[in-house]
Amino acid sequence: MGELKKLVEEGKIKYIGLSEASPDTIRRAHKVHPITAVQMEWSLWTRDIEEEIVPLCRELGIGIVPYGPLGHGFFAGKATVESIPSDSRLTTHPRFTGENFDKNKVFYSRTEKLAEQHGCTPGQLALAWVLHQGNDVAPIPGTTKIKNLDDNIGSIGVKLTKEDLEEISDAVPVHEVAGARSFDFVASLNWNFANTPPVKDHNIST
Image (tube, rainbow, N blue to C red; front, side, top):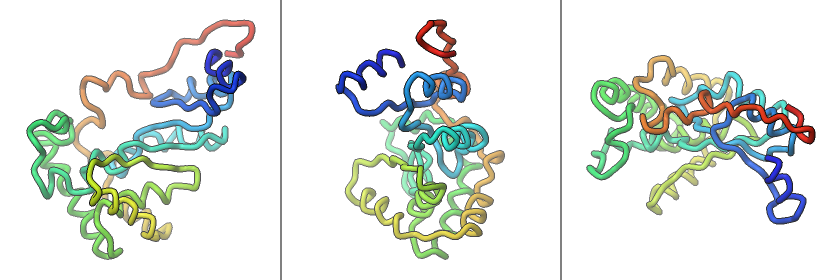
């Protein structure tokens, strides 16, 4: 953070962001230089940041950039409506394999029914749910197809009330989702395992 702060002061970069950082890391980094945004996974079936990370970011005035807002394509119908390509990484994702996948299909079905009520696609509903979490939230859905890009853009027009948000949340109880949120090979890098050790330096408050 000290080096990044120097780059800001030299005019080489404008902002500093973190990804998958623990609450303690966010606090200590923010003391060195204001953090502009924190990138974390956040979707209908991955909401573990809501208890501590989200309130902390709002306390410090840090924007939240959710990646995987469609559950790695799950809520857009990938794998549930169409088969997963054999060369896709999702074939090894804990939530898309074996019994876990069979159990999780019910969440897509529930989302699909709610989407019909709101006149949108399941993917648009899932993305709209993330967008409605606050004005400080800017999700980054990934896609390689124009059709999916257009679908994602359409989520902006989906208006949800507080009651709608609660109903959608209740349709996907996170404690019932089967399988870990990350691939096995990156699980140890998630924010809850990523606390950086404090560095004692007379110029940096720890």
